[in-house]
Length: 540
Image (cartoon, rainbow, N blue to C red):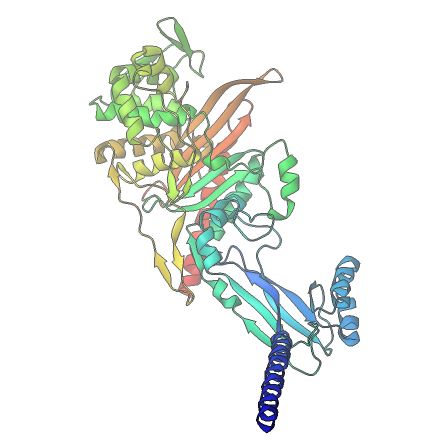
């Protein structure tokens, strides 16, 4: 009997012990969950992507700041914020506070100090007018990933260099911040100072944008360093702003299109290629051809812009006067194969790659089979027919002349910037020899003469001189009974030891295409002033 009582007692004791352990375990889990909740509630105050810089380490984004506040459901904090935001922001701000959660708001004016309120100065991606919007680009609707331009091309890099500002509150079991306990602030926004450096120069970009707007409604400008291929400025009009994308989408002039990367009829700027092909084929600059205002190739009649004719012309005179009959005869003398090969060597059969994943439209060149036809050769000789290319292709052509016949591919990336602000520079692409230094020198002299004494006179800057070539390309389109024409001026500045290649496209113009030359001239003159200013600043 005694033995059974002892066994029963031990059994009951074991049962109660197990029950106590189970109760403790359940209670411990609940307490652990409550403790986890009390461990903290983290709220993101601001995010920042990596920075896009110009070639002189000046930010093109993340250059402005704004003030943001985070507050708990404290009457004093709510009162302080209410005078610093608009009605709509205040409503959404207080709605979150009513849920017992901390709330964040961008404020217009600084609030007075208050319990439960923290104030931060944070970077803004864009504010006001964004320079070079087609190059910088914009983000997707969520503001997280790049959608166009450098934002898209370097999206992975800029996302990797993202920074964040967070505030972590100690909260009770229902997630409400506990009063009297200071929140933990974690700020890694400085990480976003790392990023990518473009070749764009903010000063030159502003010069190019202002000159383009002064003279053009639609068109493009490219300014490039010939020795490196680095694009200092790139303009496309009409342009857009990231803050007004919806308006741009509805605009019939398509401001979101980057016209500097788009194909156009080339017109007479292509006569530089024809001249290069002829010179490389051994044709002398003294070679003369006549112009009576038009020229027949088989059954096809080609007109000169001077319907009365130029008479007999040398190569220099034909180039300066941009005489179509002269260049048709020159191209036929050189042969279609020579003209095709020169065009292909200069990149007129492919896109221009400006960085990995960043390229222009593919230029369109007649095939070798098509150029068996003398009429097709005649058309190509002065940049008409199926030929199409982008302003960047034309800049690449002009720089090859300046670079003594060596082609250096244009680029928009100078390098990457790490968290310490150290630049890892990307070297220029290796040059490729396209034509001889002798040919390049003759082309350069012809382009200078065209500005001094030919059709490019209206592009001549006040000082420094320049070389260039005009172009008026017929598109074959007729709008409201008028032919649509693309106007070009492409050249280099100054005339001796050129430091800049400048290409201007005036889209869909009337008349002779004279709008591009004044843009070129204005850019040259303002570049001269910029150089003087920079030298003066360096001196002091």
